[in-house]
Length: 517
Image (cartoon, rainbow, N blue to C red; front, side, top):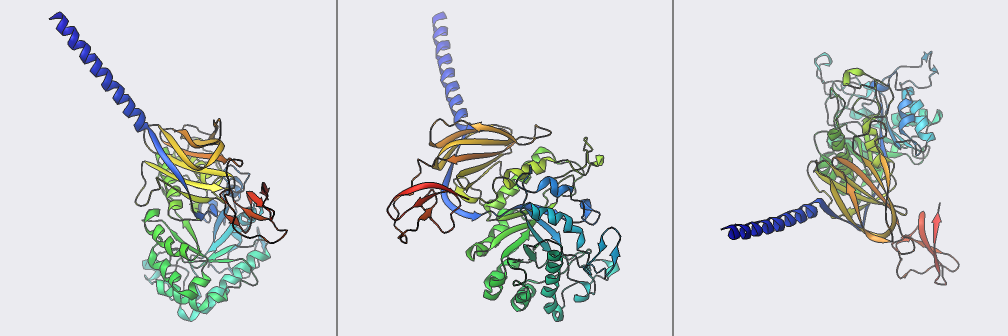
């Protein structure tokens, strides 16, 4: 019996060992995730920003501390788009002591100081009306009319005032220009589908078509060259507000940017659908307002910050070219208010918050890039436990990875081009000051496969440098004028406007890699 017991024990131990080995192998396999980045190119990203409006940026929006912290390539966050209100509030020709002579009958001066700083730092500024002037509307007021003291009147732009609307926008452009700010774009309306008690104006989709088709030519693009027209920014980025403008040839010629908000709908739902026609006709797609944890009674926890990261990521996957958050300064935004009632133990006003560092992963690195498809692109629905996206920018390949789970993973990335080095930017929520840690990725020789760590509950940006010597443009078939070089990207595509690392090919068949400013 003793020998039998020993034999059985030995068999059991061996079986246990085999099972342990199999379990371990399965665990290792399960912990490694494969991601393939393709060479397919999608939209080019214009940038990221936030709104300079009332609320936490009072008085009159003139407090410039947030834009000084958030904007410009040398800032920690790197925002480059600022949204401001084109106020309908008439104040007349008055003198405000702290402002001096005020050369507009509307209260537009508040955003001017911040707009100047953003422009000085190379950024984009655009204006959005919450309402046209009250005298242009059916209810005679800039208010939306959705309250008993306003008589519950649905404030709409009167049709006999359609021809006044774009000239009114021109006066805003003129005011800003005379004060040193070249406005890059103007919108038609903030949330034309949302009946409100505050400043607002309702438009049916066909109202917008009629307004744009018959009157958008009045936007003075000759006096203000380069100014772009943004569609009405619907509450949920709904197709019934975007597609009619794209389906009408005249409207399509006037609209440069299709825009909307994300309230009530995840990016890969309505926004993605609205982007289809916009992309087909070469229009930009901007998400111009949302705050994923607006008006909460506490500082967002790290999981809520990762949900925000997923929203950014999903907007990119939906075809977005510009993402503009709501307020710059709020306890649920980028810069602290210093109010202890929200649990801010630091109680320091104008301190960068975790959400700003989350935004920096995209704003500092994805701005100016072109999105590449991956084998794990999310295509619909709400946020997933793991999300990815990829981009190319000059000689850099950028991979985003978001892990909201409790488990760390290894990410095996297969890239479309050979890379020679890399950098890992990591945010885990464990740091209190610098929420974006940077470490090198060791690559011994040019490769297309790199395995990197993806910690639990983390936001990761992996930046790889393309191997210039090991990437060929292949056979060049285009004819080049005598004496003139032709330029190609590192994948062999002809460039009309070369920029960054590219290949210069001459008529004698010689070529060399160059960097074009």
